[in-house]
Image 1 (tube, helix red, strand yellow):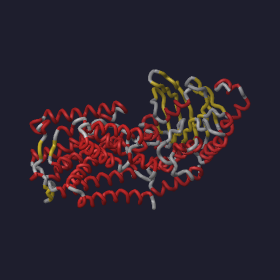
Image 2: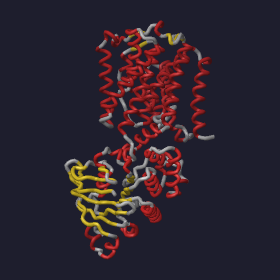
Image 3: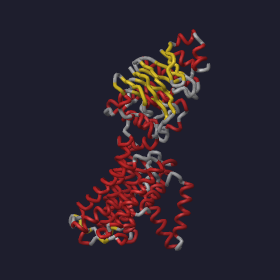
Image 4: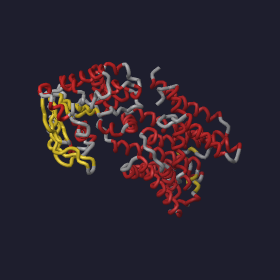
Length: 314
Length: 235
């Protein structure tokens, strides 16, 4: 069987398993998995920039929040229906990532991390400053009546799960397509050796900017979806904590692997969930596990699987 | 013709090349020789636009290349194989070549034809297509770096110390590639310290000293006058 058929089979197979789980999982895990799929979509967006392009951002929460508030504010203040509101959220993320990318990509390495962190803090403070509209720290609820998309009630757990799966599938397959085509191969080459890529005739800046915009837009889609499916938009999602999360998920799952963001998000979510049932010092368990994983699986879970078992994994 | 006209190049305040001139004709191997720090690699980097000129100009087929961004210079027909190879080490041989082929922007049919031609020059790479670049031997890595540069079908090929650290059989293979390219009409600018290679394949040799081009001679002149190598290279 060719590598393409194997990889396509694996990814489509995962989506089919997730679809089947909609009817098999108990309510608690059903709700968790819907949340995990949306957060994994965010991690997929982060992985485009960090895993495939080699750019470490510490400010991705701004894109997630741009999507969430772009959707939430248009619903709350302009009375938009969910579909155009989600598009507004993605549009907000796209424009923000274009502007931030254009400015931040003048820097590299540590400076890039700091600049993205600063931009994210500016977005966070903006959310707090305009509390009259955003309700600041407290955030705001998106009413059930505003969460009906084309006649489908997204507050219904079944619909919510399927909507989360749809967004996750779009992000997963889009990344799968991306890394197999010219643009994706070029950003991987940039990650490997930026100067050499330039010397082969590629416009490195344009490709890196494209990666920031794609990454930011996917993150914004995840943010808009999260707000819509779980009915809430809050400043926490713009905080530095939500910039660190996708980095951890991607590192744990395997940077530069298609399935890594999902595996990392799933692992981390349940690590905290299960350890918090055992002890109040659950963050200690999570921390020690993360240290052990970093020491013994430095390429992340899927990265190790690729290195040791299945070299064909994208 | 690839022509460097009185170029000045430096790193910040430190000037390396001073009114340096050189030309490479299509279908010739032009070797650049000099001591360490004389400015050989700086010359290559200046041609590729990595280092800006503070004076002078570089023309590729009559087009002033120093007026275009660095990433557009390969599109003028220049392939560059830097010192140390600089491969995409985590990627396979096939992926490395693919990046080179995509750079040309050819369609699939054309790319396939170019790849076939490149693999005819480097048949050994055909057996290594799915192997990661970092796992290749030094000689194979040099072959891959050169093959990748050939994927853009250059009119001029810049080779910076291609035989450095290679065993004799590999040196011979790399030499044959340079000769094959010359025979196809490609102009080759070669930075090389391996004097036997230079004498056996170069058409002209330019000596560089303290960033200035001192003399351009033919290999026969070197054979007859041993003092030239002593004077400029210390051999």
